Image (cartoon, rainbow, N blue to C red; front, side):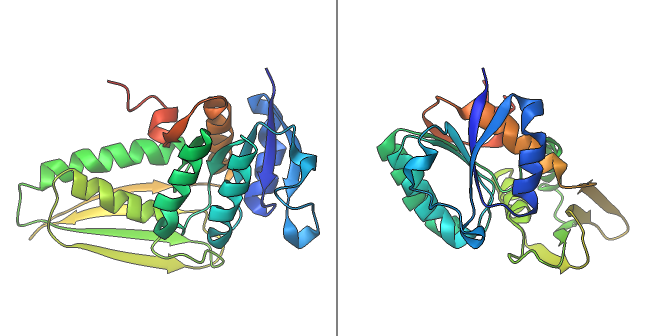
Length: 232
């Protein structure tokens, strides 16, 4: 069955989602883009949408979710930089009984990479001579630094038992889609794990897969849920 998608934000990611939607059994029911003079997110025009995919701005996310929740529209949140409002956004979604998939990165490869990093961190945690670092590189227009994905990796390392200092570094240059490297450095050797996105379509594909998965569900979910990695 076709899933009717409301695109919230129509930048590079929004246009990619639109171009790939048909491959995932989705159709675009509407586009909310204030910069282009579209109808607002709470307009009756979007009543037929089933799932919204939000690649707008961090400041807009709380208000967007509140408006979508009132209409019973499930949400996929691809925007980063709004973690300080997460508890409030989650509560609004829970009160409305909608489904939300929120992730700092929708790439399937990144989700698997996070699991690999967590396993490596657990192994290295017991070797005190090894220090750790996370370095991420993105295009010059990306505003938040460290990236949401880098912070996700740091949390995974901590949860896996690595409790020493983790040096975080960011690069913003050119048109880099996204490169994340986690390293463990000892007195005479270095271990590195790297994920590099070749283009942004991986993120758009993951968001569309998440939209199909979350339709009709209730609760707050991650890409681990979408990919079945959290199953017992």
